[in-house]
Length: 147
Image (cartoon, rainbow, N blue to C red; front, top):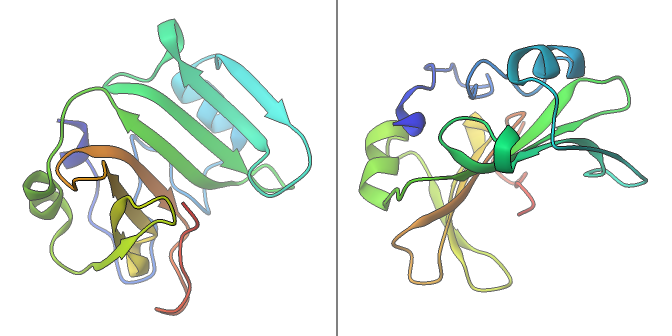
């Protein structure tokens, strides 16, 4: 299962996903690892420079994944949409119980692992994972991942 392949991280180290580490991995390294993306995008705004993998170019175990880069081409966020059903129990087994429970403005519950830069978003009933976001860890508990 893809959710269980993550390496353990120290208090302020980003969780990696399939070898891509927010705050460390370069854009060229993502392309070398995952191949040519379905789409490259570059517009204005923080979440507008990146790579999208879906359909025949999707990363194994996903429906879709998006990699976002800063102006220096360093990865700062990964959004993963898993292909298989993952429930809350599996999330807690993989990442532990060191999370804060939150709700998005649209009413979707999520678990925020701020010190790891990880957020796990569920469907509205809180039973099935819709997406997982990997970012550079928060420097303080007040800093949040914007869903």
